[in-house]
Image 1 (cartoon, rainbow, N blue to C red):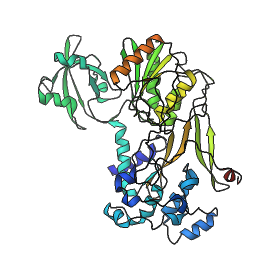
Image 2: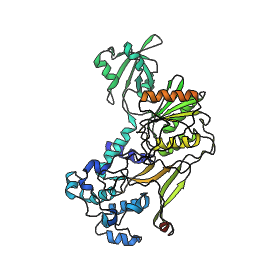
Image 3: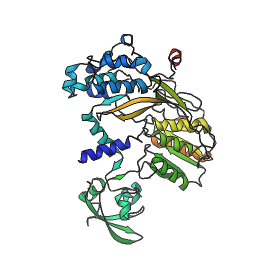
Image 4: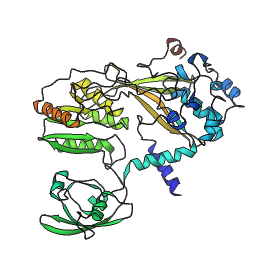
Length: 475
């Protein structure tokens, strides 16, 4: 029953989950290259425009689940005109023994093979026996099971255990622990004792922990049970009186009812008197694009264009895929429109993080410090199929407001500094001066992150997507 509870929570979350989810290269990771050998592009048989013909020719050889997924790719995979052939290209082509060795259900062989041929590592399929595990991981990724506070490292050399911050809605906050509290005992034992100290770093759900803390020279006892809570995705620190807002990911379900956006806005308001702020997006792999767009608007002026977004749509009349281009625009002045921002980024800054940087730098010319970003300017649509399998299909492409592309090439820093401490020092220097205007642009060398393991073609996602002229004429 507990598994089903997580499943339905996962299904609910799919309605708001990131469209730019960071995911692994499934076929290459799971099978190696043997089961994923591909036909050459010249050998692909184009699909038929006749829906009935497709159903009739596939009915005796393909399962309903295969046909359903074939149509999802046909309508939503942004590169379907290059890589999606007729169903017979994928039926009976796999290495059956390799599938069996890896415990893939026989009636899903052809579907796995078809998804592998789509050429980008973010388009993949998980059969029902694996989708539940993935959904459970998805839910657990949004929850923390720990004490709910962090210690101030500056006090540790002196043997003091002082709480630096307490996570919102965590068991620690609900029990009354506060920043600045000094922990003098855990279950009656000094935290210098290894057994007691371990209670600060390891805990299981349901464990009851008793703390003795000192606050304003007064000792008091606080007890609480470890329980799961939605973790914060944003935190605020200061260096040399400069606010540093660190965004770890973009999620709709966090310690704030409004997700990462709500946390971010809260810290922007808290630092409203400051004229400059550092936004640290290092190691942020992305998340929910709606959260990202809303947060970007908070830094822009009324009328500013955030990004350009190309999205695949199903034309139900002509039974075709079409591309819809939208330009999210700020309709009001954002709370940070007049503030000077400096961005910190590195090679793990990807997806939504890059969208945010591209949005602000193309509008405000804010400087970037660190290293060239990952270069993921595409997004995915996640869906549960009728059989409760899960698929991820690349169906979004992002550009900056001018239509310039950072996909595959990343965003170059104005100040290339790999050392984290030195990069932060430079960001603080720029934030204090408030006079540097961005001069760097997007990368010129392929980052190489989009070649699917086992694919015969390296890095085949196009830098720009447009439907061929003859394709558009049919509408």
